[in-house]
Length: 215
Image (cartoon, rainbow, N blue to C red; front, side):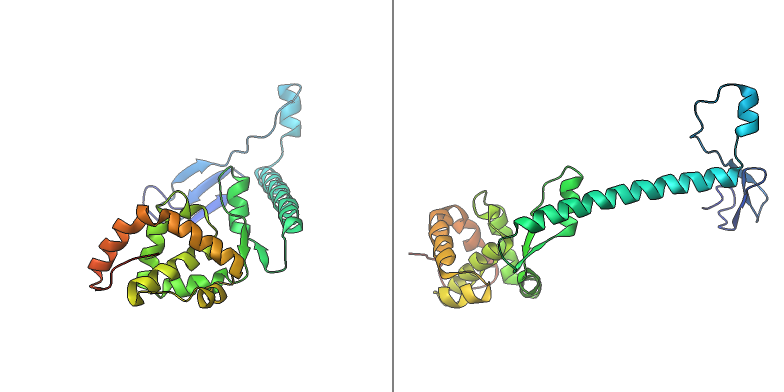
C-alpha cells in the first residue's frame, strides 16, 4: 500500500484501533473495516460479539483461502475429465486453456506433446510465422489444430522457397500421420485460392522469385 499524501510505502496497520497509518507523515489513510458480520440480534449483542480487527482480518483470509480451494478443486475435476477423454499418451491438457474455459471463454484444451517444439520452430522462423498469420485469417484453416496449421505453413513455405514440398518429411516433423497429412493437403487445395493473394504479397515482400502454385 502507498500513502496517497506523501507516496511513502512505509504504511503500518494499527490492529487495536483499526487504522492504516503512514509512518512517514502520520496520516490515517483508512479505517480497516471487515464487512461480513450480519444477523446480529441487537446493538448490545453486536457490541459484545464484535471481533477485533485482527480476528476479522483472519476470518476474511480464511474465507478467501476456502474460496481458492473450491476453485482449485473445480479445476482439478475438470482437468481429470478432459484427461480421461484424451485419445493417446501424446495428448496433454493445457491448464491455462482450461482456466479460460472455466472463466466462460473459448480455448483449445488439448495440446500435443510435440506442440512445444513446434512453437520453438515457429518462433525462430519469421517467414513461417507470417504464413501462420495468413492461415489464422482463413475461417477453415484457422480451425485446425496447432500441429496441422504448422504443417500447412511448412508446405506453403517450401513451395514459396523451392517450388515443391516433401509431404512425408513435413508429416514427420509435425508429428502427423500420413493419412491426416493427405487430408490437410486436400483442404489446402480447396482454400488456396482464398489465401493465395496474401501469399503472393508475402513472396514479393520477402524478395522471393518463385511463383506460388499448388496443383
